[in-house]
Amino acid sequence: MAELLSFVEKVLEREGAVTERIAPDGLEVMIPPALQQTLEIPELARLGFGAELPEHAQRVTLESDWMNRLERVVGTRGRLARQILDVDSVAPSNPERIVEHTLELTNATYRLKGVTPAWTRYLIIAFRYTAISDEKRDGILHLGINLNNGSTLDNLLDPLLYAAAEKANEHTTLPEGIQLPSPWGIARLTTVLNRALPTRIRHCLDRFLGSMQRRQERDLRRIFNYHSELRQEALERMHQLQQKPDLTERQRSEQKHTEQRLRAILREYQAKVGDLRQKYAMSVECRWIQTLELIMPVQRFEISIRRRKGERRIALDWNPLARKLEQAPCEYSYTWERPRSVCDDQLHLVTPEAYGPCTQCGKVYCRVCHPGKCPKCGHVTG
Image (cartoon, rainbow, N blue to C red; front, side):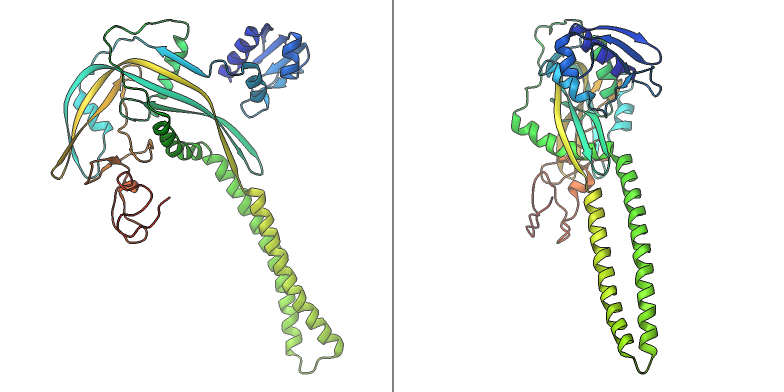
């Protein structure tokens, strides 16, 4: 929580507050009147950011409503930022080996054609997601995109964000004669975000979903066992009554009542299961927070990809800060997961799932070439 503590400290000081760090992992603050109302705290307060709180301190976490309070303080400031990192970019000594360990193709071959210095334009977009079920989870998700080729930057984000924060107060100008990738239009960027965000948010929520599923299964077992016992008792009584050759009026009434009870147990069980499904149903909200345009030098790997008689050239950038080659983009899902398959028609790079068989007719087709439905049977895909 050290980063959150530093962030809150800077925000409050910019708004005129006086802050002092206290142990363990806390801040003692004196807040001006306008800020008191926005943050809903008194003039003198203590804030805690660690597992152990200072005495009389309020806890500040990413999951608390403090994120909403700070959002009201910051407003729209800092939502869009542009930063130039003019770092040394020397070509790696063994580029063939780097490509071998990064580019994984299931049905095509490739050859490295060359490595040249270049500049690129990254977009690093921050989102806040909130998942609500029987419990609530909040988190921050960063999605990075190289505008030169659409590669996502999941394996590069940490060093890029660290470097951007370290050099936040430096003002670097772009050298003359530099060619940068063109900015993307809204339609293209929206398509990428709609495809890339859901799987990443679900990945962030994996532990939360697993815990929620275990609780749901526990409650379902408890309800099932309880109603099974009730049902078994009623069935045993029905069986006893059915074994008797002649039933008295009272026994016939009891038999009818037991039948009604069996139906009532089933209705109650179905209603309880429905209540549980509603209780554990999850909604997820994702909101844009900030976009950082990061411009910096890279080493551009020109790679030729061959699939049967077709050939296509792609460019992947090696980042000197992360000292890694970015993943080849999946031009359909923009996932970070490997490997990639190459389609026959346009040589699109996609995941094996995006170049797989139709669930209806079994025809293998590329989801980029034929978005939305199978070209053979017209079956609509998700």
